Length: 219
Image (cartoon, rainbow, N blue to C red):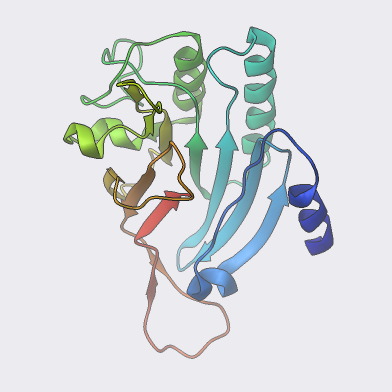
């Protein structure tokens, strides 16, 4: 399985998605499933059960309808395979804004959405609504510097298109914001950090204290 993942992510591909895990959390990882160049999933154990974390890279806004449709069909199939009882988190580059209106999407979009809604937005919102997921950033008031996740080089264009979608059944979400100072490989995307209140415990180890998964972000 490890060799398969190495080949998958080192081969020549147009797209790619991966998840970096802190050293202290490695003993908690139960499963890693590289689905495609746009979707990967891993499961992390905690004291009350398991988190299923799905990392995504959605088609860009200008791509054809059928590409977006195929992506969300694949994402739906991955989520369908998540064991019942797992806490679900879906995060990554959705290439979509939430828009500022909450009409028909009150359960998944908070009062602080951004951008102009388009076709890609509707795909993301319909997915979040159908899965009972909250789009984390839209629930917190932030300054522009802590809101926008993507800046087009050489222009003033900026958008919030990278998101963390959290299972709405669990009141774990504490905050979500952008850290502009965390520059990654000269990328045009900025680091998004979601702070979750959740206690984790490594299996088969002496009780020397609890490990906290305070932050899950996107690199």
